[in-house]
Length: 415
Ligand SMILES: *Cc1c(COP(=O)(O)O)cnc(C)c1O
Image (cartoon, rainbow, N blue to C red; front, side, top):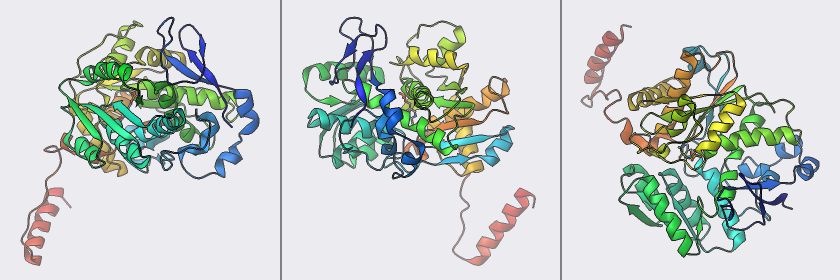
């Protein structure tokens, strides 16, 4: 039932059969999955998608597995929230939050990529799954790997947030904490992947894994009533999610599920790790690797694998990018919480704070229907806002004590 034609090098166009490989043997370009879009066009309709269960497998013709999905069956189809209050605050006419902080089993968008990666790993016959992670991937592979009965080797930078380490350990994977940053971990994992016959979801399975990110784009379009937004703001680590949202919009146009595509794609990064936005701002096509230093650890990739392709998508679509400080990230997390009741992790703060800068500078049009991609739950990075929130009121357990405090509250708030 699959519509995958094979793999193709993004640089030289050389074609490969479907295998657990990720770079071109001739030019070392990254490999990408190609589909038979004519076949999909004849096989998939809006009504068919609508009739299916509300998870990411409703778009299965556009995903690179051959048989029935076996992992991540409850991932995806997160809410698209019309953000009236936040929109009003920012002066935006039509603002939405793609809320990947909820619904997913491990509360981040990584459940999208892992659903596809592990289903594909099973088709390839692997019994062990592995990853190099900035945190959310560790959590997701630990969980879905447990449910799928895989052996799991999870590599993380030792400096990760405690909440994310504990969340991963709950599923009892082999968690390897490396003394180094993500880029060190990733380099080590490439060596391990060469030696052991494991499915490294973001190395040898990467072409398939990355396709899972497209489902965020399909959902946005479907939830907008089969319309691509005018603008979408996307947080970037490796840059993969951003490129795949663009790919998803193009595919929906190609197979006739949307008529028009004029979406501008914007990148959001933390100033302490902004190689993609820095390349945009300096107008050069080469991504200069950086040493990450930011509270947005889930985005802390100093040498982004898809960075160059992300800049190309941004230019092709007419978008742009911004970067924001740690203080701006924290303020944005709190703004999103108090206007929309959505508690996002640091990456969500990066997206909103960057969007605010893009709006202020006029790079993002206030009249544009705009979707902010909010990719992970705030409970995963609680430590980032400790000391930056309001404090609880402490009282004795009696009505008198409560009413004294209530008086103070009312006096303070001037009501
Ligand atoms: C991994 C991640 C991203 C983006 O990752 P890419 O490597 O750019 O695809 C965004 N937000 C969160 C919370 C993540 O964990």
